Structures are given as structure tokens and as C-alpha cells.
Length: 115
Length: 113
Image (tube, rainbow over all chains, first blue to last red; front, side):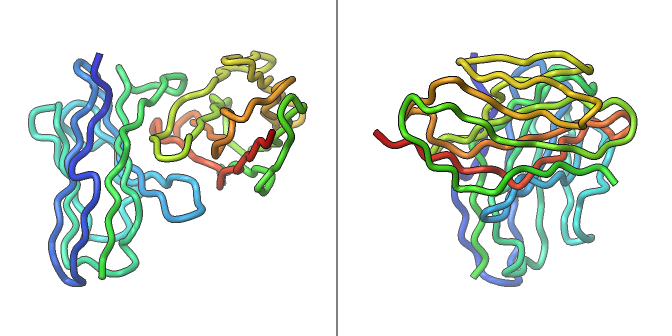
């Protein structure tokens, strides 16, 4: 079946602009995660949804970052007033349900470059 | 806090050599442990996992054993191939951690003919 998809695959924007990154999880997966991966580093957790609600948003770096999942499927990560330090690959993952032993399936990522 | 430490790369090996990539962790409770792989130009893929002490995860000739006494989850393969060239990430999910993966910094593996 189809895996996790993310759009756009690349996004170039200017400092101060607003961007939206979209994630389509695997059909039927109730848990959805956002991570951010900087060059040469491992992914870092941003936020996790169980259904429509954000179960844990402790990884969001500041209030410029916000994510929604209004119908419990597609999710959008929103970044306001982008800064050059926001440049990274933003990864989305989904799992059938939340749980310590559950496998998270990752999408290909959106590469964000803030000029 | 909860963290994962991996050996630094790049690791360069000849084809058919034995591979070990070290991974140690610090975590509260009883975490689940994972190895993810990122091939050039591709997304992260789960390679193997272990959810309790002494479990061995295995896939595609790779193995890793969950060692609670040494808090380690070292990745091994008996005979690497050029196609194994990738970046390997060790990761954990800890009890009470909200189901979020905590990753190491990754180890790049280069396999040459």
C-alpha cells in the first residue's frame, strides 16, 4: 500500500515568510509524528498526534511553530515568520497506534531552505 | 535524561567485511530500541527493533541484541555489501516518553569493492 507522503518535497522561502508543510499518513494509522532533521544530525521530535489532538507538543521549538490534524488523517505543520535557523528536513511519520513498541513509518521529508 | 550515543562515522569497510556499529543508551524505564537506515536519496526505513531485554532484532542479515546490563544495542552484520552503504540511526522510545523516538546522531557506512 501507499506509504507516508509529504508535500512539497522542497521549499525555498525568504526570512520572515509563512510556510505550510503537509503530511499524508498511511491509511488507518491513528498516530502521526513530526520530526526535524538538521544536516549531520539525527531527527528531533517536534509533535505527536493521536487522532485529531496533539498528545505531545513538547518538541516544538517556539510559538512560531504550529501543527494541526483536523480530521485525524492529513496533518499540516505551519511555521510563521521563518528564520534561517529553521532550514532543515522536516519528517513526518505515522504508526497504526501509539505505543512504545510500535514501528513508526517515515515519509521522504520536506527540505526547507530559508534564505 | 534519555539519550542515544552512537559511534561516529564515517565507517569505511571493504565488501564482505564484518560490521559493528556501537550504540548505547540512557533511558528511564524499559525502552524499546530501534535501528533505522537512510539510503542515499531515500527516507528513513526501519531496519530492526527489540522491545525487551535480551531480544534480538534481525533483518537483511543485520542483527542487534538488547543488552540491558550494558545498556547497548550494537548493530552487526557478518558480510557487508556495497548496497549497505547508508546512514544508520539508533533510536529509542522510553516508557512515559509520549511515544516519541529519540535518535542518535547517525553513523555513515561506506562499503567499497
